[in-house]
Image 1 (tube, rainbow over the protein chains, first blue to last red):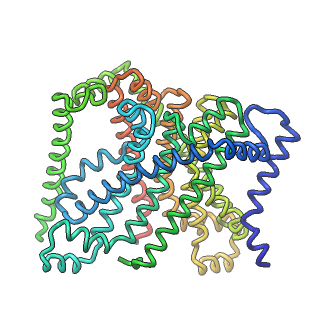
Image 2: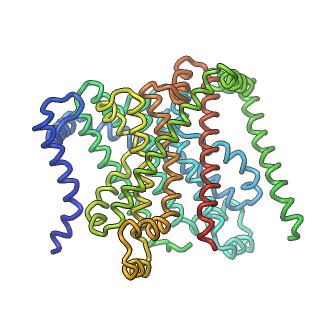
Image 3: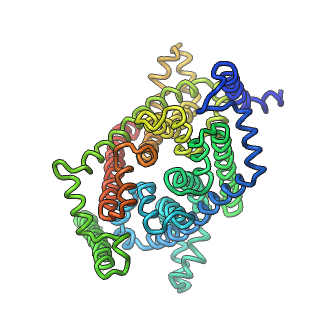
Length: 252
Length: 259
């Protein structure tokens, strides 16, 4: 009983893969566009063997992480400022609302022009994409910090910096990690997108090249791996968020 | 606070935040004119405005590109919404289907939509249909998962009511399931519109389909910074307008809930 319950999530993907395998082996037989899952698995093992898997994954994850770091630092800094000062929030409203809707991918050509290809352009686009959700969610979290805590900080005569670091940030850290989890997902998606659209590095580019050199097995291997990496990174971020929420109290 | 000052305050602050925005533009003007940042990257605001004016004037290319991108985004979004709601209702209505399918759906969700672009190119070539299908597929997930969630969260008492009234499945979907899932669906559709715009732009860049994505990529390759900025501004306008309109629609559609 427990075993069937444990197996239940696996039936559908296994059936789908088996169907795909059978269709390609029996009906299509030879194709430049698609390959059966077994061939993709063989290609995947080849990618592990020649080191390209590790290198491309490290590039994508590294640039996503660095971009996220910059976006988070700026987003939290501005978010705390706007959250604490109603005037700053009101005065920045138009600027934020004008800049925020610009899709991050629109900055790919600009980043290309400024930084050329490579790590820095990808970091810049990821940082822009993650800045806005971090800013808005931090601002929201800070405005909901208990007013009495802010009174305490005023009574103690804390400076703005001390107030932010000692009172406000600890009070909303659980919510900040919710924001961080959302931004982790965005960072990875944007990083892969930059690689597919322009940057000749990382997993996205490796997948593009596999398609262009008519190697569908390798292309599908990359697609599956990007899926696994995305799932793992999101699961890790969710786990981190839950640990922080348990230790810091989810309510505040 | 008196009624007058409460009314006057948003007006005053929106004036203030407009001034802050104008100051930022002035900073941009100063930075490009004083040469703090090379004009290769940062055109002057006037040059950007000129490019916008020339591109949007009769016979200009930017107007048709903007229209093409907007249409692509809307088509993909509508397809995604229809598919998402239909599939989501099919899966969401049956607890068995949910138990078997939801883990797979959750696995596919974090997959970047643009990662499907190479696969779609292999299948459909560098065609408008390829871009549209990736847009629709990528933008479908927020709606699909929201619909499944909305159906799964139907109150147990409403399920009992449906059983007592002996509603058929179709009637249940129409009278209880969909209205119940509507807030989730609308939130999902909002996210999906953003995804549609992003994937449309990426698709235009990769597959060289006419649109703003292709226009800004070509402008950057030719070092035409003012045209590049004009394209970025227009994409921002599309994002802003679509999000604002959808926000209004959402409020109008959900009015019945608050009463």
